[in-house]
Image (cartoon, rainbow, N blue to C red):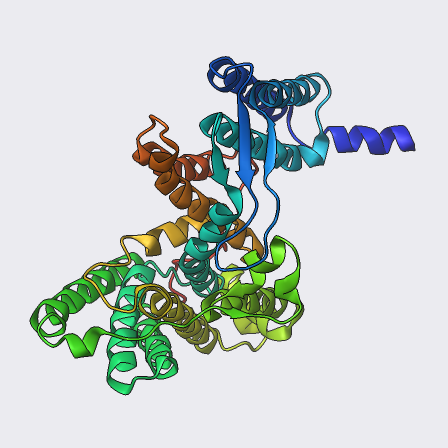
Length: 422
């Protein structure tokens, strides 16, 4: 019996995928040894700073010998790759892939900072903040696509919401009113997307693209004609950091996770609430059933159109919250095309996370980390163009879509207009 269970676990992935993953693990080890470990001097030490900014709490730095640590990292990847090729890790393969990725990233940072130092705590804190609009945008996509509507208009919804949030926050002097306006703006654009896609069955990709173009043109026009002339309309306060009592006092992680602004906390709340709502409530079951098999849902008495409207409007509101981050949580003013394609990156994060809330959060952290690391490269003096680091998340996404880390499963009926019989 035990032998049968072991065999099933080891045969969880196909032999081809097992070999591919084993080669990936081995390649990571060889790469670390050749490009990271060999060029480093035998007497070089790497220092990782563990004290994040914005706090009086001081944590001692972590210092270790660069070459010896990199050799150990390379050996670990090679050992994991050898075992994967020989026997395979079964259903734990994706977990091992994550470990190898972390080891590779650790090796890169150890090599980049060899003979110097890098503030790891600050890098992680910056990554979390940069992940906020991406994660919120990805959650917006989940709400729409789980109901069967493709929301490619997230970029436009974020951009329009960012402008409205800045204007209302500046005029009223109240950031909360600006945030409310941003959320409503995103919801209205979500309603427009739903109206054209559900009622008139217009191609959802075309509608989303039109909304993106409309939002870009309108916000650019208002910015150039009014906001640059009347600066008082585009100068809003931003939400400050709010430390959570007791939790923010936890060494290292407390400051990183619980000494942030309101947008980070809203992201935490949405992740938990949306995960529970989608998978542990009747509402979530109905929403997912409409995206998977709307005709069967209709037969069971679920109002498909109303459910889709609800999903796409909520999607727009969450995208509006993400847009509000840019002006009310980051810079305090609106600039033309300031979202810079992050709505589309959020869609990639949604696919990366397999349409799961916490999966998209992990993907958002990867994108945010790559963005933060690219900014650190010039400070570290690494002779790698920052553009190459910005490419890394997209390469990882293509790997996911190619099925290397497992097949992603979108909702079965997303993008297909539902026509009620009778």
